[in-house]
Image (cartoon, rainbow, N blue to C red):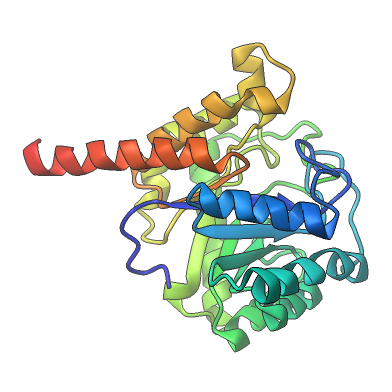
Length: 277
């Protein structure tokens, strides 16, 4: 599915949660969720990432049963009511939720724990022949921002992702079904996030499609001197453009239109560089 990616792909965020850091409660109703999906489709989204559990810093876990109650009706409605062939990813660390979502019509598993929270999720991906995104995180969402520390964040994240990749391959997941995510903001200080963004090419060099998720995150607010996540749309688009130039292929964002434009313009520049550079 992702082995032959050409143009960058935009993954639009749909949090059907009451407490996500930027849009909690906005799309927890089915009608609101479907309207948001339609808006993202019009803006040129490639993948809809649906999550029923907030992973903001300090958040508490949500039971698999509650996650399913939140996400299954939305996935089912997208398939039945919108009749769209859009790719759907399920944002969960639970094997139970992942399997239920795939059965309901999702295509991709997006695991912020990189398969560590519930290793059975790797078996679910392998048995379904489904792509899985393995993200790096330090600690759990509840504790990840309690004094995170790295000697060399780029090297340590790469080593950790290599370990997650090896475990996924051992579980029977095909290489072409593995994607990686450095986990911007997940157990990282501002400087850690900046160093990872400055060295995205090293992650790309691992040979797996890279997903970048910076959307509206707090570390950019400290740079831009703003406190409202919704004011960080332009800042996010900047990181999207930089990511495209570094070879990143997927971008998980709240604001599809703006990041679609940033990715497309950066891609055109990159192609011109190859032709005329």
